[in-house]
Image 1 (cartoon, helix red, strand yellow):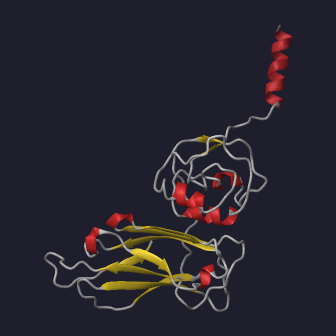
Image 2 (cartoon, rainbow, N blue to C red; image 1 turned 90 degrees about the vertical axis):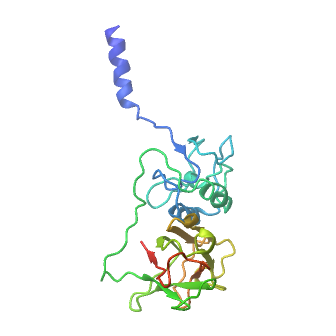
Image 3 (cartoon, rainbow, N blue to C red; image 1 turned 180 degrees about the vertical axis):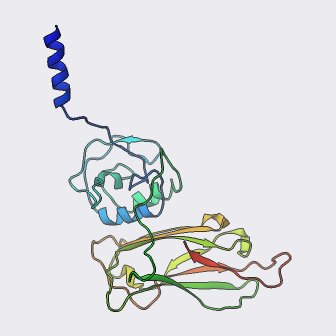
Length: 251
């Protein structure tokens, strides 16, 4: 009996540990939260196919993975995480149904997205806002263009982007958040019919998230034109205010 137990213990040490994998629909980068960065991963895996889940849905719960897909992201994460609805293909439905539907939900311990702002002077491109007017009357529409300022001596190839933004509350009509629209013929989605866009304006809470990504695995060189435009309608009546300043910033 002792020899049998010893043999079983030896075999147990030789068999590698396997850990079940689960997908939380919408949390494509598996960091514990659904946000606009997950859209960037869908843009990379767009069109990929693999084993689907027996139960195709986007309910916010841990979904068992039937099998690994043949491709992985550069950080080692398997493509099956991008199949948020479990139908065996990565497409725009994975954004519309799961990322938007479960936006902001969390599970377990939330970790960072793996991205950070570049330090000043490192030569990285920067974003810039430009308003169509500096003085806005109540009831007027304020539009703010979003630009990517490239570094001429070191041009960047762009595939997608994700932004956290803050804005002043109490100025927007209907106590709602701002809107975002890509400019017509924006250089970012040139020739890409399946371009992905996600804008969550926070229902007037002062926070807004933007995610944009191509889907054809072809990067583009930034243009001088704006990427898109943020617009708000200034509240007709701002109690107690004669003049004040609306602020919009990238966090």
